[in-house]
Figure (cartoon, rainbow, N blue to C red):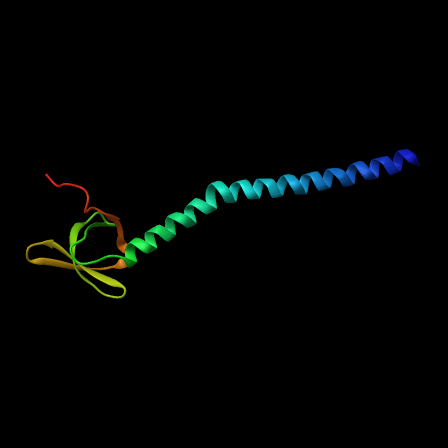
Length: 102
């Protein structure tokens, strides 16, 4: 009888340690994977909302240009002296204003 009670307590303790271990794994995954990704997305959204005329940018497709006009959801990019492209703001991924061109 005493041995049976001891086994039940040990089995119950291992289930608690399993739950604690799973919780710990989830917290570590959130801290190292989910949290940095959310931070990166927030920075990108702030970058896209702060776009203004004259900024040099790169799109997802690799098109380099200078912003000519900014609307609510789109931007007009000057790619050449007589060529402007209309792209969605979500396609703008990088600021190239600080990079010098050759």
